Image (tube, rainbow, N blue to C red; front, side, top):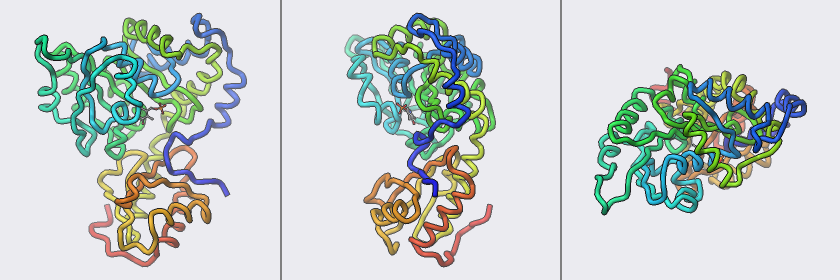
Length: 359
Ligand SMILES: *Cc1c(COP(=O)(O)O)cnc(C)c1O
C-alpha cells in the first residue's frame, strides 16, 4: 500500500513528467548566465507574476533571505508577523547574515497583521531609532492554518509601505494556493509587492527550488546576494526543468488539494473525540484536535496510523492534542476516505451530534 504522508506538502516527490523533463533538460553554466532552462524558468516566473525579472534560488529560505537582504542594509529594521515563517523557521538568517532587526507583530487568524499596528511599528526619522525599510507578508499564511490573504489587504499594506517609502515583500511559498482559494491569479494578487518568493518544491512538486521575482534592479541586487550566500548553481537547468512544470502545470490543479483538505476536515469533524474548526479550512492544510476524552493518546494515534495504516501525521502541539495535516498532489480522494476509515477505527466510530454540520 502506498504511504499517505500528510505532514506537509514538502514531502511531494517529482512527477514522472518532471523526471523526464529533467533527464532531457538543456543545460549550461548558470553562473555565466548560460543555462537556457534556468533562463526560461526565470522568464516564465517573471511573466506569470507580471514582474520584470526572476531568479532561481535553492530554497524558500534562500528566496526570503536573498530578498530581505536585497531590500535592507545592515542595522535596518523590517516588519513581519510573529508567527511568520521568516521569523520563526529560518534560523534567524537575516540577523545572522544581514545584521537586520525584525520588528514582529501578532498575526491574526486570517493571516493578516492589523494595519494600525503596522503603521505604529514604522520608526521615526531620528538617530535613536533603526531605519524601517521593509514590510513582509506571508501568503498563504502557514501559521494561520493556511489562510489566503486577500488582495484588498495587500493593497492596503502596500499603500502604507509607499507612504513611508518602504518596500513590500511577500513570502509566497504557497502563493498559488492563495490565488486558487481567492479565485484570482498570482499576477493580480502580487501586483502591489516589490518582491515575491515562490516555492516550487511544496504543492508544486518540484524536487528542489524557489524563484523570486521583482524589478530588474531588485533582481540585479539579488543576484549578487545569492552568489554571496553560496546559491550560484552551475547546470541547474536539470532542476529548473521540473520547476517549469511546477509553474505551468502543477499550479493550476491546487483546487483538488483544497477539496481533499475540506473533505478530510469535514469527515474528521464528524468523528467523536475530534474537533476541527471548519471555517478555517481554506486551502490545503488544517489543524485538528484530539480531545482529552479520546480513547487513544496523541502518540498512540500517530504510531498506529503509521504502523497499521501507512498514514503519517505529525503532532503540531502534542500537549494540546493538536495536529496539522496538509494535502497535496500525492494524496488522492480515495486516500482521504482511507484516512477517515483509519481514524474511525482508532478513535472510535459512532455518530456524533454535529452542530450545524451541513453547508
Ligand atoms: C516552506 C516555507 C518557506 C521556506 O521553504 P524552504 O524551501 O523549506 O526553505 C518559506 N515560507 C513559508 C511560508 C513556507 O511554508
